[in-house]
Image (cartoon, rainbow, N blue to C red):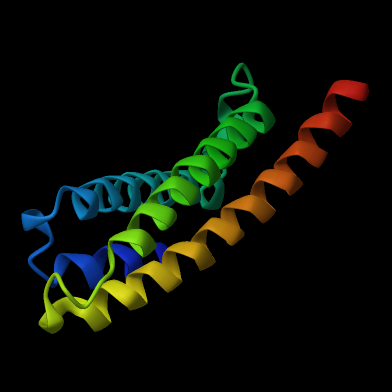
Length: 124
């Protein structure tokens, strides 16, 4: 839901005039789609039908990459928000920046828990 907020707040503006917001949109939409995909896989328990895939490693790589790229996108988003660009879009861009940092912290927590899960499986 928070990732959805990030890209909808930007998509409602004229973000395409500023390349930095294009990067934020790419990261936000890409990881939102992948998160929904993995959510469906886990809710339907499809992962139990494919035991060859190391799901703990997949989760760790996914969450780790999402954390790093969302952190970069959040910093780019925050540094690109100025009243000089467009006063009409300022509030949406500022809100998207805030939520991008919230999503980053969520992915950081998921990365930590994925690492703990991966580590406990590799020690067995």
